[in-house]
Amino acid sequence: MISHYHKSKGMSLFSLMFFVGMSSVAYIYFQDQNESSNGDDKQGMISQFVSGTLSQKAKLQIKMLSHTIELYMSDMGNYPSAEEGLEALVKKPDSVNSYWGGPYLQASKIPKDPWGYDYIYEVPGVHHDFDLYSLGNKKHGDSHDAVVANWDIK
Image (cartoon, rainbow, N blue to C red; front, top):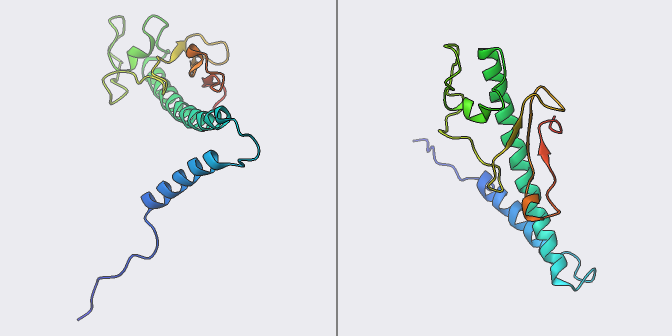
C-alpha cells in the first residue's frame, strides 16, 4: 500500500513572514548599540519602521480607491463631484442617473487611512483629474509621515 503521507519540508509562508518580521524588529531595536546610547533614537527608529508600514498600507488603499473611482467614471461618464465625495462609491447620490452601477466597494463605508483619518478627495485635482491623498500622521505633528497621494503612486 502506498502512503500519501509526506513530511513537510521547510517553513510555512506564515512562519517565514513571522520570522522576517520579528527579525526586522529585533534588528531595528538592537542595531549598533555603539552608534547611540540615547533610547529616544531607538524609539524613533521603531516609529519610522511602523510609519513606513502604515504608508505602504495607505498606498495600497489609495490605489484601490483610485481604481474604484475610475470604474465609477466608466459607468457615469464623470468622477464623483466634490460634494458627493467618495461616499458616491458606496451610496447612490440623489443627483445620479440610472447608470450608477454601485456600490463600487464591498464595504458599506469608505475606509479611513491607516492613521484613522478620512482620505482627502479633490475634483478637479491639481495633479490629475482627481487627487486622492492622506496627510499621514502630520495632523498630530509626526514628522516621519509624509503625504501619501495618488500622484506619487505608480
